[in-house]
Image (cartoon, rainbow, N blue to C red; front, side, top):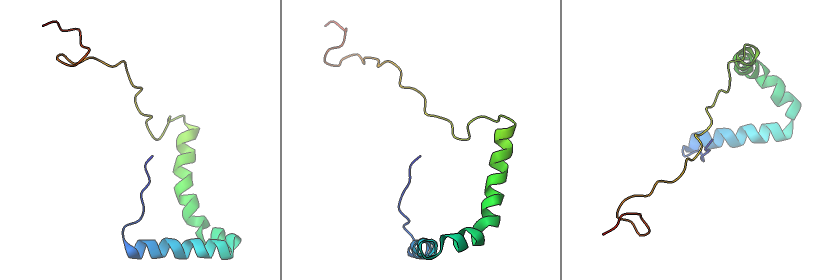
Length: 78
């Protein structure tokens, strides 16, 4: 997973306000967002219950490197 900084100033300000609200009173913050959190968690729990598999496909393993013709160290003879 790749994360990036928020480029939008309004979104950054909202994220900072949310963090400050959590730091000030974590219990009230969790209570205020419990309904949204449950709405996000319920489909994930249902998928896990039926064995839907991973939500994010893992990256493909790197295979053996193939040599390109014409490169230093290649098997091509002149």
